[in-house]
Length: 270
Ligand code: MN
Image 1 (cartoon, rainbow, N blue to C red):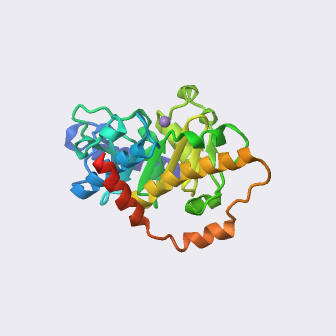
Image 2 (cartoon, helix red, strand yellow):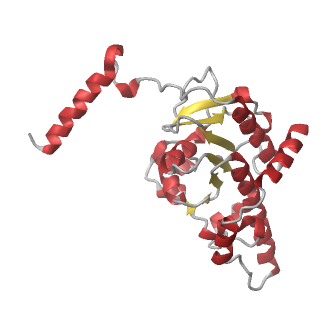
Image 3 (cartoon, rainbow, N blue to C red):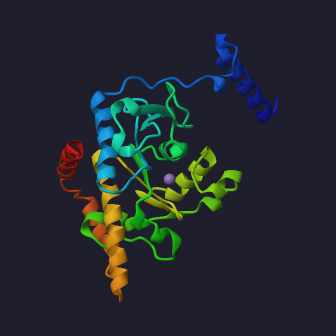
């Protein structure tokens, strides 16, 4: 038996075994839950939506997710709902194909594939934000790169890739939104190992290791874009944060919780 025939036989056997007593192939079974999630994490995820709404980063649209803390192949994200309204009860669980685990009649957001495919491609990422942050969009539709100009935004020093939905050969691509796994995979590939990527004519994704860090970087990506637009409007050469400066700040991240605690208090008071 050739190697490929042997592999095919093993695969066929695996499907038979996986089908088990249900009589269905494994792929047709609904995905199972990754297990219970600490209520404090669901609270913080709901707060992250409120913070980003308060800061003008997400309006009626945009979403934040966290990877499941004990099941890396699952993630958690709100149902399709205006971000300022999100509560822990609105948080749904998904597998990395972005199939909801137990929707309970709730609608999942169309662009959830952004999240599933980034978690699949980036084991280091624990949080994904997708927004239509308005100030970043000009850098996705011109040849001017989004580069750091401000000490709170030095994390952009490795570069900010721009992903164009038209680069995906899929009938859905013309409608701009990341509405399937192929488009999510393409976006995740464009993001590479960076913390931020822009979506041409659309918005951005910001990824990171925790809610406090990623929310902060989402806010300061927008602030940096605003400052750079202002500087370019003044004219003349712009002095950017250098790669050496960016790398140096990476080693001394500062007090991340100070911003998080303040934004959380303000968002919950609104
Ligand atoms: Mn979008």
